[in-house]
Length: 521
Image 1 (tube, rainbow, N blue to C red):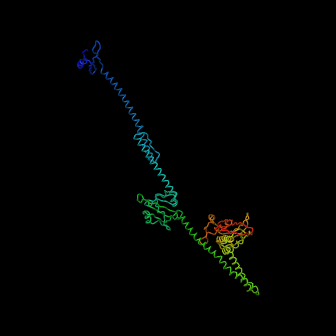
Image 2: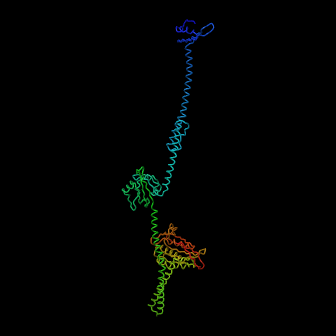
Image 3: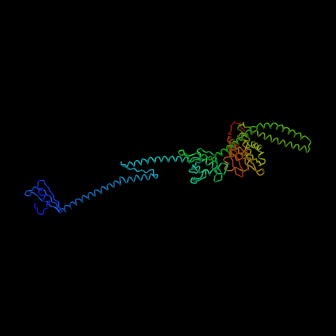
């Protein structure tokens, strides 16, 4: 090796480099020298010299390439990690949060439905399970509330919830109807007891009573009055009970029951009882009338016989004005006694309550008997007009038929308010209809029957007459007696003009043997 220009450090390394296996290097500012023994024939050592700047540049290039590769790898890893976080974590978290937010605003179908087995997936499944449970509970609660609402809406009683100050917090449709309010908003917050009154009073309820009704834990029962906008007053039954929450009184629930129907039924019952008592008295009178008629008939026979004897003897006396007046008086007395006998006979016909024989009845004779008994009602009110067509016999019970005709004639007389018989008329007519049945028409020029009342006049105990004047049973009994023998009864009326009853009875050619039957009472 040439030593010229060699540095001392290199010179020191050469001896060691000559040794077998020895390798030495000298790095200076502008070069690097590596010494290593190599077995080459003829030459023991080769010296290789390279510029340090070139080496550094190469190294820099290698390092730059490696750094760039590492940077790209690192960026790729970061991108992959971000993608994983975005897909596997952030999106799933947002999905869970979104499901929770929708569920919080009553979207009971909101679910996270997260897949996987990580902690977030477990949290998502736990949320879904909780949502299912809450949704089922909510559904059962809604169904229960709907059942309660239907019960409250369908009840006929008015229900109102009150707070401790008596303000309305709830009301059902029946309460709205009772209080004549169209919408609950018109009632909510109103003072409930300001709407009610004590029966027969126009003053509001006493404050002490209201305070007791609100503060007591006992049920308060009271009949009260409810003024209506149209000026009428409803009778209502008030029933108020406490509402307790964990033993603490928090309000009251009040039931209002409309007593109008009950009051009406009680009044109808009272009238019916009075009418039944009247009917019982009339039945007793009817039963006694047969005996009374018999008792009257015996002395009446003596009276008529004696009057006939006196009249006959008076006619044998010499004619004088005084004697003629006495004869006239006796004849008038005889005529009156004969009329009494006819009435007694007709009463006996009417009073045969145990005779239910159905047979041939002379219809026009039965009409005459009825007129005789009703004449005291008719003579001062109307003129009785008869238009008989000679219809003969009808299938009926004589006593029952007289009862029907008498009832219709008395009703006609009572329908005429005036006492001017020349201006009013009760007309009785008979004829045969197109089918050969006996038709009897009894009409009057009385007050008439209102159209809304007409369909009910044959109902038992229905009457438009004052209490004590009628029982409400007459027309009902007439209807049942006529239909029992195969006939029917019709009515037509106009207010201010009058009323017409038409009775149709099956006719018979001749009087057959009677058959005992029991017509409907």
